[in-house]
Amino acid sequence: MILKPMSIINLFNDLKEEFIFNFIDGNRWKWLVEGLGVTLQVTFFSVLLGIAIGVVLALIRSTHDTNISTISNPVARNLLRFANMIAKIYLTVIRGTPVVVQLMLIYYVILVSVDSKILVASLAFGINSGAYVAEIVRSGIMSIDKGQFEAGRSLGLSYTQTMTKIVIPQALKNVLPALANEFIVLLKETSVSGYVALQDLTKAGDLIRSRTYSAFMPLIAVALIYLVLVLFFTKLVGILERRLRNSDH
Image (cartoon, rainbow, N blue to C red; front, side, top):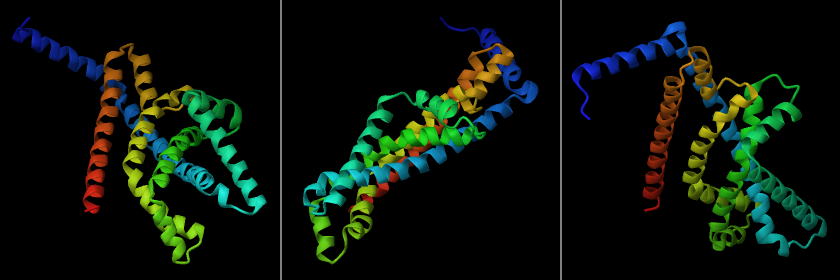
């Protein structure tokens, strides 16, 4: 079916009126801007926390897998086994339960006295992301040739120095694209922050819908904003991957 020119004009006018009604009237567009700011804040702090947790867990697990049989000190060996057990429990629980349930548990049970919803959300998503970052970083560490580690030890470096100066920098370079993709996934996961009444981007769209009783325009606007953000960060990841490939030559 071919739309007549008058039908196209009427459709355009209807969309224009719908846009003005949803976003311009009452300055409701500001809710989207404020919600976007909250979403980016939560994502940023969650990424930092997730990387910190992930690196620590990855070091514990990779050290256990590669060196547990060579540690002669029984106290150190038992401590490493205990730390590895805690890390495995953490990974199992966090990766085996929905992030929205973790968010609600932290907000309504664990940190019920904390007033900052951004802080609570950042902790919840950071703890969740840390489990996935841990496996990404651990795979990067395990992919490094053992000869690199042996070379460091032959130069007189301690285990810690070898890991921090030789192994970890190479591992992070290998997994950097995967970490960047985890950031993109985390950005979208924060859309459930509304469950704890945090006015993020998705919640802002829902507030507009509740005022205008129009679901199409607010939800499409929120979806488009997320799409633009994802495309932007995906482009950055692509540039990063090309530069890393070029640096290898």
